[in-house]
Length: 210
Image (tube, rainbow, N blue to C red; front, side, top):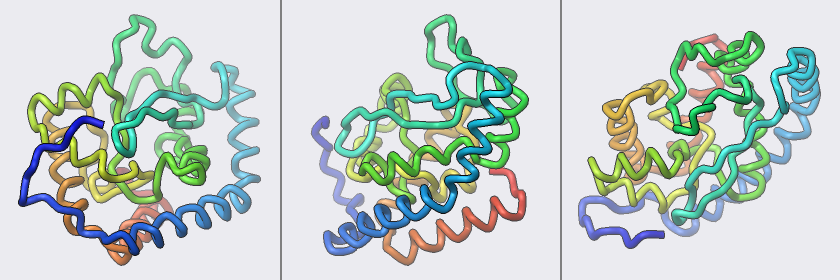
């Protein structure tokens, strides 16, 4: 992890005890989720196998807690050659690289289900900033070095920025997301996390796009 520059206006809103409780809740929630949602995992697996677009599970290196790289897991929503030129490309809301099944999974956020394993293993949390690739992190840091504070949190399945900033298909939206994530870092608590989780569930069940 790179040395975080001192900014007295930015400090963690969650103490050590709350962080420990949060981690315990993540582990229990992820394990229960993997068990309860196993039939849904099987259904998605069958659909993706039927579509024959490549491997069912897609993994990609992201930068997480303490600046350490990890592999994030998702159900595949794009063709395997979606970045055939070798250059990282941001996902877009109506991405033309999405497969038919992949578009459905993306719209209903079902492609994120395998990240329950990331949560169980400690790579991620239910609530936290969405993890990014090093290629894009380097660009963001040039604009705002406070991104380094993001490494003080485990990345999450959902966040306030995820709910209200949508897809980050531009640098402008990336910087807005960063500001929202920094605000979360300063204000986070177990209650704030619960509100974000329940809001996320509500959005998904009501079909609200985010």
